[in-house]
Image (cartoon, rainbow, N blue to C red):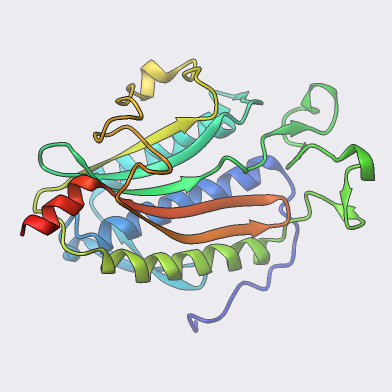
Length: 257
């Protein structure tokens, strides 16, 4: 299939679970592609694949795939549903893939800003069984419609086109960030909109360092010596932003070489 060809699926994404699956799939593909382009693992353990009608890379190592998959399920649980219970707060502000030096110091952060991502909203009292969900609370002034149509009319094709453009820009920007030290590692971190930690964080998450640190704590706006905005994904009521932060530690390392 030609890489320029986009999905022609004009069907509407029907439920919040479907939207959440689309988001975590996108995050999973992004993580694998970043690990490839930043040479965290040898290129030979990656296979070239296609997602959103665009060439991407997937690590073939079983433990890496399992780790990324488990991490994305945990992320999805904090955004939406975990252990069969819906999280109605939508308390996740950012999801970051943080690349760490051999000394466990943050060098680069690939930040997915979800602060404007719609929280789960029941379209009826009690949620109507959990699957019939609005993507965003209705606007009282126009009866829950925007421009005369339901706010949750997001098509598969429209969302895939947005994700495709984001992957294209990420695949261009990531290799241009320069060479990292050997034996770098990585982690995935969440920044919450509110200070409350997830109720089950002790099972799958560990507290990060404070936002004022230059370690593994997430820090938006001034947290990196250089911030590059990659793409804002906008599809009707769906919005997320991707940016890359290069920390002061990495800048000093490059300057001293």
